[in-house]
Image 1 (cartoon, rainbow, N blue to C red):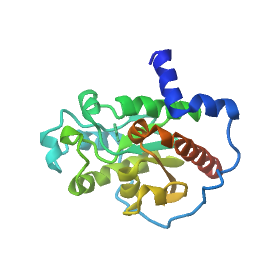
Image 2 (cartoon, protein in one colour):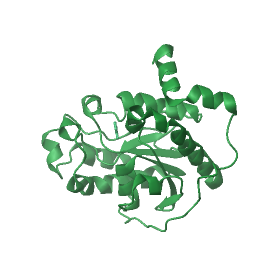
Image 3 (spheres, protein in one colour):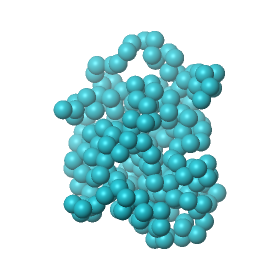
Length: 232
Ligand code: URA
């Protein structure tokens, strides 16, 4: 990304202001409370599961009707042994074309959000709840999420991240098996298969509602703090 565009995104996020204020926050923002949800997801992976099998299964998947409209599946990208795993909702049109997650405008913002907390896309593992793009960028249907859910669980068990960041409502509700609204889920530490989960605004939402950028920064500092608390 050229520097001017990068600065535009940083400005949109308010990151220029944030970074000049201090380096990393030590404590959680006051309005953030810690809470542990005792939700245990189903365990699907076998001890012999591996990336090649999983990738091939996803690439050839016909479990739901999205296989008839996709150009290709979008498995995920980044470091397969990452400490940080980021989970979005569904690939969009650009992702469908390129076979990579978060390559559109939301992806550019996600890259900048990561940069703001000292991470690169190559260091983290990025994937989505569903691996095929729904036509016309519509929300994923429940049956599509259910069909795809075992792939996400298996990815988590192969990556073994130290923290999962759920990007937006659909990712959060799917991972945590809840219908609670995003506002209730942000600012807490949840649990997915013994891995801490924090819930943040989806970058596409932030692009539409820039006034939420301060809350987005709170989400990110909460994620860093959670990661530090669980490191080691
Ligand atoms: N939005 C998502 O949730 N995932 C992508 O890969 C792109 C946009």
